[in-house]
Length: 249
Image (tube, rainbow, N blue to C red):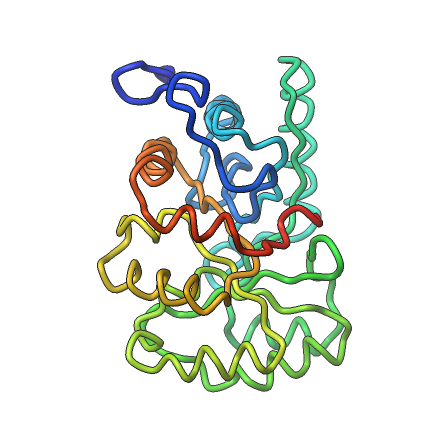
């Protein structure tokens, strides 16, 4: 794999005085070969070095768990995490990595929850989950209710990216009132995903509804986009003033 740190593509935080808004990143795909993120241990380390150069000291990485696609179990995730930690130690990197998961909400996940199967949470029993980008799942409200009953704190990954919320912001307000925490993808505020996602990210920041931020880093392209986001988005200052919960992890 070619080295990521090329001056033409990426300069260190010392060169550009860029800084991630928190020192702990939530939501990334750094474990090798188990989802659509890093595919090798070498790529994992390259991404970790890139995040570190932005001022991140710790990552709670979150491989996909999808019932019919990414069939990752806690054991699979822990085994990959152990391998990455050994390589970090071998290379004497000043970086801490933990792992939870990004669970896709479908009937398979709902069944796992109801059967009491182990789900990987982080921090104070936070559980990160994502939705279909196109259609709101009918079991969303009951899933959130059941998470609370079982002692989890639901965290919705990148709410700004779901198309069905873009013209129905009252749905997001309902989720917030139901005790759902929101994790914003930092690159959304520079329009990396779409103009609509950027506008929704700005609205969430203006409404002070962002609880966590994350890189959602899968590959080098996301690191390069992060550098551009940190350097040019007027909403970065607003985001830094929010009481983000990353520092509690």
